[in-house]
Image (cartoon, rainbow over all chains, first blue to last red; front, side):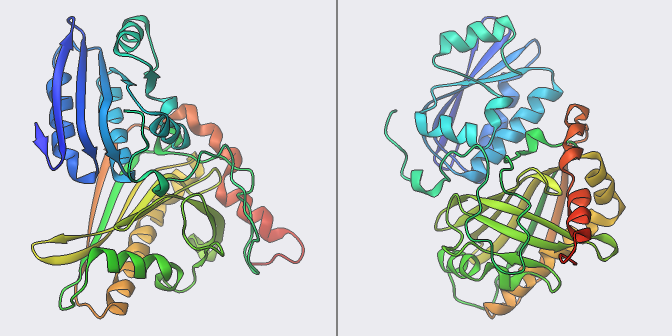
Length: 122
Length: 233
């Protein structure tokens, strides 16, 4: 799934966790790629979706808005939404926009997967 | 990745509460010390509203549109609504005060913080005590060879009173507000074009856990402020 300068890959970790690998830029123009990846990852049986920001190059306020839409879809499907790989800058942006109160932020994929199975932030 | 991205300076620096420096004459500062609220912390249904005007008949670029829009932001607002920009302009982290017309001739006194600002867009985020929790992004881009100006609101009513107000004509007022703003911008730029409006309910669920936001209700706080001796409307 590629759109503009965003490329998304979807991996499964076990039966109930999906990891969405984000590579590139998240802006308002990336809606289709992000939503397609979420749809692919949130297949039957998925209890947690983890966003991997390790290869995020750039995100603007339009991109933050898209993450809210993903969060709504995850909440509707009773799935946890978690994230890892954010730089200090984007961790601060999550705090500023208070998305960190709804999307659990972790240092590594292992920590996020462990939290997904242990009842991390929805 | 450990380096800051190329747009790091476009974002506001982290703040826990808002601080207004030098509130202008006539503006009521009811946002001092308030926290920002994203749509996640709001109460009502979540809406995404997109207002768009194609700037036909004029040679311009998204960058030029945004510069003009940001520098003269208040002048495009419909009559009866006041926007008090910070002295330094709409720079990331700055707070602007607002006196907006509400239902029944009421004036809502609130404010917004500039969350993000770059060459092709800028975003305002609402604090506690606003009508809604969320952000408004003003942007410009090219569609089929024509420059477009766009306002996009992602919001939930902050509290049950605001939700009721929005349902009872508030949404309609807000739609008219941004449609008029875009029409004024287009006129200013010498362009011809009709404003289109797309409203999507992103989440029909109300977040009852956030009903407590009513303690900062803009309607209650603005009314109390109006009743203070010498404050008037």
